[in-house]
Amino acid sequence: MSKLFNVDRFISEYVTERKESLFSKDLLTFHERLIEKTEGRSALVIGGAGTIGSSFIKALLKFNISKLYVVDINENGLTELVRDLRSSVGLNVPDDLKTYPISFSDPVFKKMFLASGPFDIVANFAAHKHVRSEKDHYSIEAMIQNNVLKAKGLLDLLVQNPPEHFFCVSTDKAANPVNVMGASKKLMEDLILAYSDKLQISTARFANVAFSNGSLPFGFMERLAKQQPFSSPLNIKRYFVSPEESGQICLLACLLGDSGEIFFPKLDYNKNMKTFSSIAVSLLKELGFEADICATEEEAREKATQLKANSSTYPVYFFESNTSGEKSFEEFYTDDEELDVDSFSGLGVIKSTKRKSAEELMKIFSNLESAFNSETISKASVVQVLKAYLPNFDHIEKGKNLDQSM
Image (cartoon, rainbow, N blue to C red; front, side, top):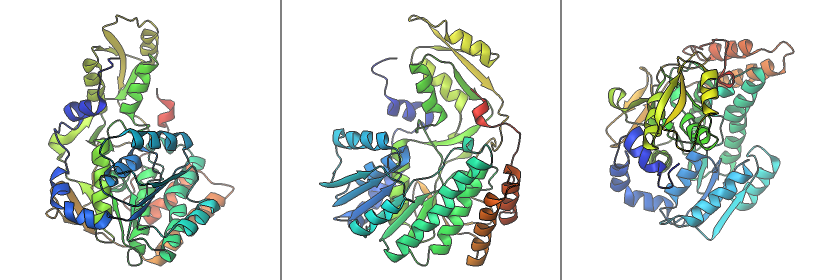
């Protein structure tokens, strides 16, 4: 691989096809307000070692905050985060910087929070984000616990120690969800709305973050490093933002949003959708390879073992998606949600969406807990509980998950 390969430049030229950030104008327009919201403030970032969380931190450190505490269960990720922040140009890293490899649902987190807080800005990025996490009732329980039930415990803690701003990340898959991850995030959004009169709270529905940790493009880089074949669906289109843009979305939504608002990037279906297979071909071309299209996984694996230093082709296996929870494209909002597309240049805002009552939320939480504790629990039974709560949850079940693909 060329030492001169720059992933940010590649994303700009071949993935987002934007020379500057989608949110450059908004950052300039609201610069003074962002200074007012951040100057001398303290911040707690949960799940800050991941791609979006770390990008939010970098966006935040363009301003002069006084204290930054970062929590994540990924100890190695926190180590790399600090090295990255200390090695970057143009970031105002505060003297009071601490990272904690703990879970936000652990008792030790509450001890730290109560002793070190309250914090002015709190952002939560600790979430299950992959459709592949939907395998069986065990993985689904872990996902819903993390994305919803434990998140409620965090909200209850924040109500007693309210920040000026609280942000938590959602997903485009929450709009008309077809997988449990999207349904869990829609449930999380409903939870946010229920607390929006008690906390200054906002969220954002995301496009795919190009080359984010664990993403398929990130996997391409890992396959290259290990001289393994690329594998990608042909029929899956996604919106993409750069890692830098992902942090900027969160910063703008966190600090400028009214309580209960849901932000989304203003992207065009006809111009901004990309297939993973096209990104794979462009990446190989940028690195000096021609994609060698293989008919099967076996053929691709075999050809990868024959790669030599002077190889001009690289094996890839493209296929039609046939796994549960995948739809061919994503969307940011539904027909019954009230939109504001004028306040920001690069962002749209969902101003109003149908709210669930506290009684409805308590009932779904109780039903989910009962399902998880049942001796006859199955993936299908949990999906039915979610469908009863979310009538537009059109779950796509194909009997195969992403762990069964290369």
